[in-house]
Image (cartoon, rainbow, N blue to C red; front, side, top):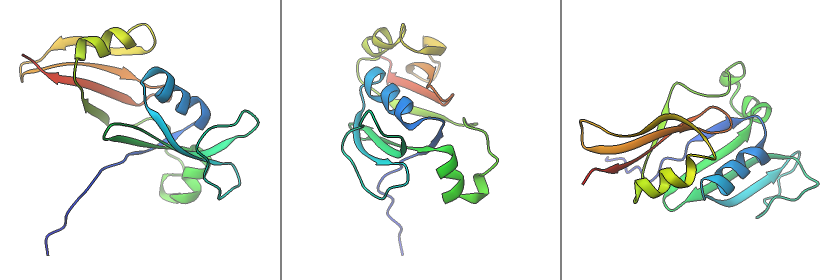
Length: 142
């Protein structure tokens, strides 16, 4: 039997779901797909000012991230209870118009590795999100 894998959606442990959603939507241009308020099983389409959130999903084109508050994450996946937020992994996003993406972000985020051309034919840069996750943006060099 051949297994077909359809999509990878990283689930990131975050300190504050609202803050993370705002980073991904307002700075990186993602869209909020859904959010789950604290102590609720309701799914909402937008964040409300008077609520705390335990979980959310954001997307941009074919890239999706789930954002889960650390205490809820540890409850759902007990093996990760004492893991620090952040990771020894980077997320590599293929984009169009890398120079425009870089110029739109450089004054809004922490640039971890500046825009550069690689020996393997990519033009790329790396940032850290508000929880310390490393996001790489890349485009094939012309």
